[in-house]
Length: 487
Ligand code: TYD
Ligand code: MG
Image (cartoon, rainbow, N blue to C red; front, side, top):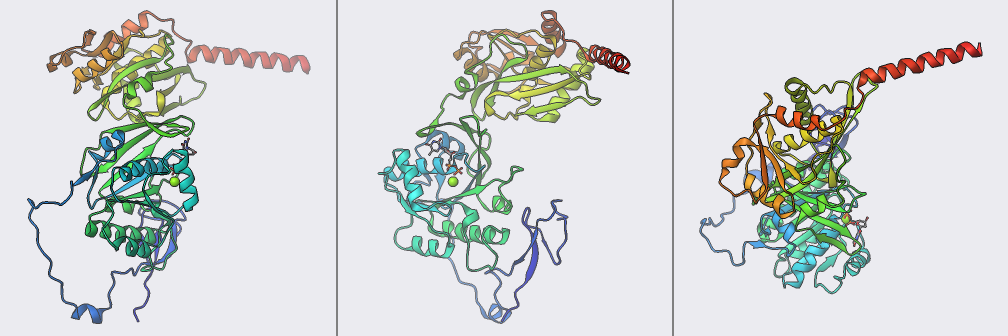
């Protein structure tokens, strides 16, 4: 009998070691190594291996006909936008997200719609009992959808059941961390188990042509729990994000072998499940605080769709030696860059101030085009000067202080005009991109200096660190006086 091969496997990144150690050298995490049998099903004894001859298989052509449409549209337009038009036959997709964000809700709604359209859809729940899944479906008003449901965790049992008869078009596995396979010894949820279970399911998807959706949990630092390894094995990784306290949810493609990765789907969690938001700009701009300093509207793009959102900055005098820079929804190194450009080229001294920066509505922005709107919000807060409420901003800022052109200016302007904005601050070169300006009055900028001077001229600056220092000195002097009186 083959000797079981035991290794110490990092539960965070999957690196294997011969002996136990406190720290994983691959990912730097502490106390993540645990002992696992990594023999797996693939290791065949040498005696058999030498005798086994390869099986011949049929080679196919690229132009071959597939019996069904290669993609299965879910019926939820926001989900289909992110997958690139539906689920591809034989592909495996991983949906990650924090617990309670709404993964099961989203997939219950999508599977019900597809089942109602006449496809064979199977939902395997490893976390909840059948009764709980039914309860959710009843709450969503989808109890009569012909989805085939089971509460199972054994991968072998699932594959045996589904191999019988016509294969399903789509299988949901909720979640991959609860699945286990006989071929490896480790406990469910360990890296080895998750990897082996995912491999078995991926093999089944390729063989049967069914699309499989794996649900994965996210750890506290935002990775799809421990088994990052699964991300490399699947065809697409979608991440479902949102602030627990807010009702907006954003579905984003992190990896997609069959579609774009820059599209987002926007949903709103309501008492009756997830509602699709087809015009996200209206959502992100609702409840705007008009006329207060430190807010600027950024005309951004998410994939092919323009999305307007509000950027908020708060600049306050600091009492710390190293001022605080806190950012939500944007890249903190990008903020540091904009602050450095403001300081170096526009004479805006920010060393004595704490800077807080936030993208409203829980959106996360990756575009460099947000630089100009961010700079406008920062200067507006510092100068205590509200920006015009009917203006949008976009443009990339270069290290020399110039405002650089960005793509798709016409689409951004059109969306801004549709939402009732009257002016746009944009790079000079953007005018020449051929599209119409949507009837907005355009303030083109060659450099950042002109914009900063314009905002600063309208405001009343706040006290800086020097003023704070003097108030501190007064306080200290007052304390000393008080002590003397007591003594
Ligand atoms: P769920 O889909 O179970 O999350 P996940 O599978 O990602 O862990 O969603 C759980 C949350 O969604 C729960 O806090 C309740 C909320 N919810 C609603 O607000 N409305 C609804 O109609 C449903 C079904 C859930
Ligand atoms: Mg769930």
